[in-house]
Image (cartoon, rainbow, N blue to C red; front, side, top):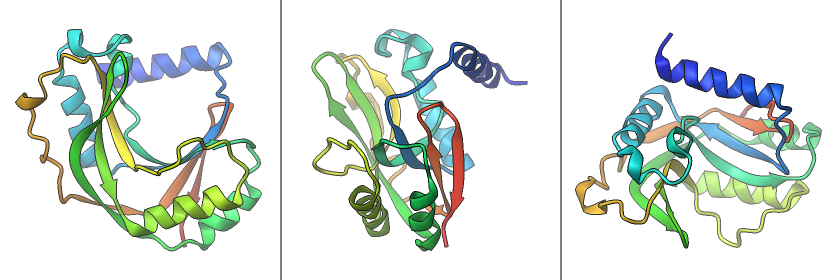
Length: 184
């Protein structure tokens, strides 16, 4: 077993033992294996001293793109109906950009796709949620980084133009469990 896999499993076991729960649920799709490996590799290439606050936990290991965060209920019956009726689609990966925060930045890879936006709005408009973001900015988080990260040292276009076929949506529930729902 690889060291990184073992770390993830240990983290999950600790969280489960501690009864990890979240305020809200979310919907997301997972990156394909190659992109996930490349994103994790990029995160690991960032020196530890430039990772914000949490050491290894400041690097994303669950490589995904959130469709909608803020689901109030873990009951997925209505959500399942929306997702199962929605056709499979593709998204395009774009440049590495940043969400700038007061004390750190979020390094992310932008994701583009008309159908992705349509699915986001369909869920947002029909499923009870507390989404507080006025504009949907789909992305894949790489890491939480310190302000002094040398952005000029990175090739910000390394993923630009790659595509992901989205065939299923993962519902992450408040209790930490996940449910996979296939698209039409």
